[in-house]
Image 1 (cartoon, rainbow, N blue to C red):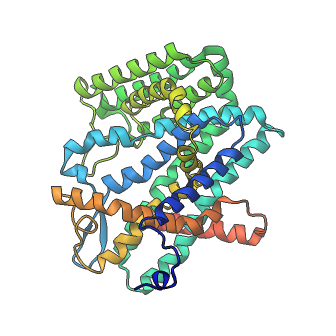
Image 2 (image 1 turned 45 degrees about the vertical axis):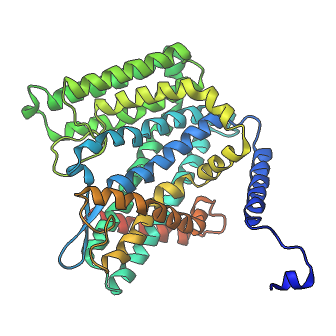
Image 3 (image 1 turned 30 degrees about the vertical axis):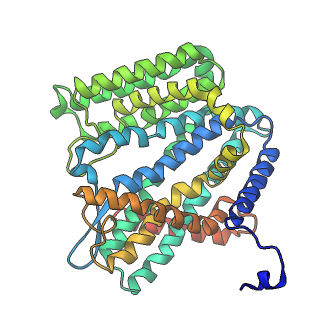
Length: 421
């Protein structure tokens, strides 16, 4: 007999803790909802959160490892074996949405700024740069410790590459953000059509790269696509923020983008995967090809058409609260999600072949096992974010010496990651 029964005290029914936890969750969600400013565009924040979560999901699903005889980890991709997985990259490649909402939000932020445009841009650069310096400086300090602990150099180089790999986005995003005033002027003059010259520019470069005279074209020409390729969706976002794209324009983007996407795949035989596949001569992602812009146009049109419906859904506190949390940790998620996967894979490499973690991604068993690992990676990312989140906060007490040291550590780690050391 329990003590409660012996004393006649009432006992809690089985499962009572769950309703209590749900009530606490509802109270937290209500507080977050109450603190949300009325001018906050919940639909745009929801789209940003969706695009953010697609980044780790895509990298965790479409990236794998192999083990060498010495126990070192090397990058591998299931797309090399399972070409049928390529359509998954059409869903998980949501950088077009991210740049779209980035342009939209930048317009609103720029209009509300109290200082100069230079001060506004400096603030944006600091918000993006702090987390990047944080993750690279931490890894610069951790790498020698891990090596001394017996982690093979091959594993450290693979890990460094994975950590640095997503950070290219920050540099590109800073450049397109700096162009916001130019984008605003173009949107006010041409509306959504201001993005058309960017699409045409990428089309011309693709024609030169892959057309009948491709052998005579220098390899560096591909880099020309980097700026217009990612500025395209940002320009659409600016025009959207300036209210120069309505439902008719959104439908045109959706239908036109989908049609162009299909033509490029079926007629011009662009690679089906939106991410790079090891061993393939062509890639859609680095730099962006015309297929990336076609997908971004279709995604942007769909986002604009679904905006009001999404805003109604996110008026519910329980749905809105996780969107707020994800947006508050945006750069932490971007900078540290590969570290979360490595936090499982590096210890796993000492155990030998672990299905879905350190085994080659070349069988259906690997896919099933990797799906089972996703919650583990997510939990590890949450644990890391509890500490790494501080890098998103202003360095109010950081001295110039500390900032310089962080910059030097970050630069050294980048050199190591790029294989130049």
